[in-house]
Amino acid sequence: MTGDDVANMLEAMGPRLRAAREHRGSTLTGVSCATGISPSTLSRIETSRRKPTLEVVLQLAKEYGVSLDELAGTAPAAAPRTSALQRFGDDKAVLPLTRYVGGLHAHKHVLPAVQEPPARPRQVSHDGWEWLCVLYGRLWLALGDQDLVLSAGDVAEFDTRNPHGVANAGPGGAVEYLIMFGPQGERLRPRTPPAPGPRAR
Image 1 (spheres, rainbow, N blue to C red):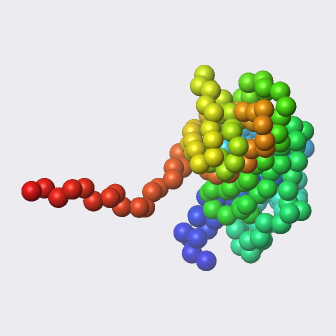
Image 2: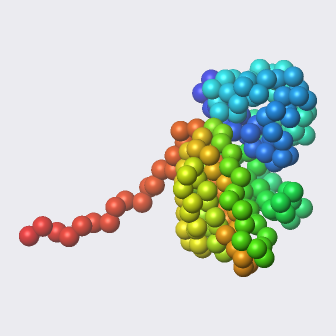
């Protein structure tokens, strides 16, 4: 393993640690209380602004119930399983689609149908960049002062330091959408060449 390999492994470990924490539904504050590592230190590690020490990695691996191979990216990726489906207090179901691979990770979210018009979504903010694509239904995205209703095929991308929240735009059926989340400053890089324009005469 070369020095570049080690550097790349450490660079990717922060997003993997974040994915492991979110996979367990833990907050930075909760992890801090359990490990004694300050929330600001955890945030800097997750966003690759600080390299974790071996002691910290061992603590977090134990707290999250993951192996060092998974955090280092040397474990074979497991195929998504139905048993990996997680449910949250608002009945939202989340299916992780990646296992700590690289700086990006993806989840499929399902919001249940609602019978009454929902309240404005509760907003949160944190370091990172998010891409969202609606697969089915109508999703209410509250992004700062903006209120957007996205339908199947609509996409959005935003800096997650901006307050944001989602809800089923109902009443009606369930909403299914995909989320990709990456570290601060990460942007998707389109590789499709532009269509040729009309030839000049």
